[in-house]
Amino acid sequence: MARPLRNHNLSRIYAAEPTVTNGTGMFSKNPSSNGHTARKRVEPFKVPTSLDLLHDPALNKGRAFNEAERQALGLTGLLPPRIITLEDQAKRVIATVRSKKTDLDRYNSLIGLQDRNETLFYYVLIHHLEELMPIIYTPTIGQACQQYGHIFRRARGMYISDRDRGHIREVLGNWPQDDVRVIVVTDGERVLGLGDLGAHGMGIPVGKLSLYTACAGVRPSQTLPITLDVGTDNEELLASPVYLGLPHKRMRGEEYDRFIEEFIYAANDRFPGVLIQLEDFGRENAFRLLEQYRDKVCLFNDDIQGTAAVTLAGLLSSLRITGKKLGDQTVLLFGAGEAATGIADLIVLAMVREGIPEEIARRKCWLMDSKGLVVRSRNDLADNKLAYAHEHEPLPDLFSAVQALRPTALIGASGKSSAFTQAVLSTMAAYNEHPIVFALSNPTSQSECTAEECYQFTDGRAIFASGSPFPEVRMKERTITPGQANNAYVFPGIGLGVIASGARRVTEEMFYEAAKALAGEVTPADLAMGRIYPGLDRVREVSAVIATAVAQVAFKKELATVEEPPNVLGWLESLMYVPDYASYV
Ligand code: NAI
Image (cartoon, rainbow, N blue to C red; front, side, top):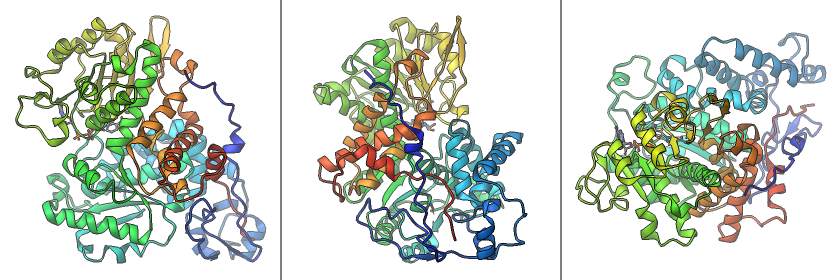
């Protein structure tokens, strides 16, 4: 059962940051050194003046600079004379964003704002998160990456290419902030379900880190998006004059491994203990790199582990509707890549926690890849699939697999659009009173089925969730709100918990606890609407709860590097960044 909804006082979560002025125009640019880790405090920082101030997105306030600041900081005459507040600026921004014709235009408008005035950007984003998340993240972010060469205006984050081999540490030294706590890094080989976009994958780390700040209050200055430009095998990009990366084929093999190793240790040297989130790497590298580094540094892979946590949470919530236990489930994962294997592994861990022997738990999870059901007799299976290669006759297609296995839950993570056909869905509905159907593939164009198809072909009985958002569906006098299995529910909270506790490693148990915490935040009202995740409007509150669960694992397992406070939730909430203008004079 979900805990009763705590009446979170927004002002508590959004509590304004302390004013950073010290009356002499000096302030810590990074007031984030708020004592929650053992890091040393950054040196006081002198506020720049004139155009330097207006061109610094972390400090710029645009028309909100007051008269005293304008005079003291050489801004008089450089801004229109009429002063407006942050709230008024935000109203103008959202009106402008809404007036744009396409989502990509909206994305460009928001990124432009992020490049000019970060505080205003986050203020708008946090206050309109549900509306804007699909713009700065999936699905629009997919389009943005596909168009990156055309829409690129100003570099954000860092690009590290093979030209930097041997001196990556030096290159990282160019980043102006010393107190970076989280890096999201991609090599752009498998961007969403869109394939190899090379250096144009940069949109993803930028978007994800914006969500770290918006959803979990990680300070913008503590985040660093990085693209490792190791080339691309995308012929269209290689031939394109607007491609931003070095136009050569992907680096592979030992050369690639050495490059990644240099990067991981250089990042840890430059930003000791930094949390590294691997993002949108190709399948083979993703598993290998996770295995290689998860016990050596503070690192996780969101495509594998974050997806697993959000999906397990959805499954646990679904069971509150079906009234069944996790151990009663037969789960068929359509797709056998990063997302699907990660999900299967975490479901197995959760079943084991319910007392089911691991071997039996594994047998309750089945995978399908592009060649059919993953079975023991196949000799073409990658390592990640072997644990789920059960004894069974080979089955080439999903429909026959659903007929043969009678799964209670069907989870799509294949990138294959429309794979959940009417026949597949109605068969699921024939075997289950409430079939669990998750069509996780992103962006929307790749989804295995739409929400409407799912409800229509299961007589409105399915419990549905998708990777990208779908609108409400009207079924027999009832309005169903499809759940979004959005990783943004979990990775920001996990990040906050890891960063705040100074955890030295990110463990599987953290993802399991994060999933349980997320499921615990789903209210009976959510379930009544057909929604198996909390509303996105509560994501900051939910992130704080997830961060608490994660930090508690760090404290319990002696992975933390700070002392455990008496009230972990209250402590984490108090650390969350709130966009507000500091006073400079
Ligand atoms: P991946 O490339 O590692 O795996 C894709 C898998 O799908 C492979 O096993 C492949 O054999 C299989 N596949 C491809 N075509 C198929 C077909 N016709 N029939 C059966 N299997 C087929 O990719 P990854 O990272 O696992 O992502 C897969 C999808 O899941 C992507 O669209 C991605 O956007 C989505 N995803 C969604 C998330 C969410 O909703 N929260 C999070 C992470 C990924």
